Length: 163
Image 1 (cartoon, rainbow, N blue to C red):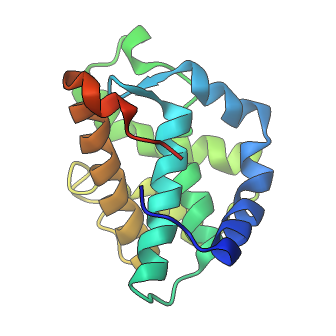
Image 2 (tube, rainbow, N blue to C red):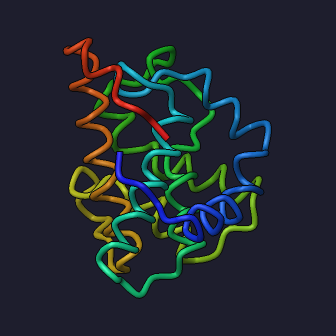
């Protein structure tokens, strides 16, 4: 796992504190995501890697919004496998549900809203990310999802350290 520098770790922790301390966000640890992890851990990983890549590439981003949007991108509060939704329906609709929940329970700004709503591009073809923070989260969500999926088929990779 790539490492954050000491000051970056402190920044990251400060930016996530109000979100990860929320009981509803913690409840995401009860839902399986991509077969090998929970929605909570997946969202935390997406936030971590989004922040890490932005720092390493020297991108001028709104860091707090990048991290908060990433943490809340799958804030659905349900296990889609236990609903009447098909996988395809869930893929297309869950960004809207996550945005609704994020707006209801947190004071999200327009950038965080875009990150959440557009993280599933190109599946949600009409929701093209236009802000660099949304593009980063979209990419890191895909990277983390692929990693989660691979770990479910290759048990030795389950030992890979998560955030």
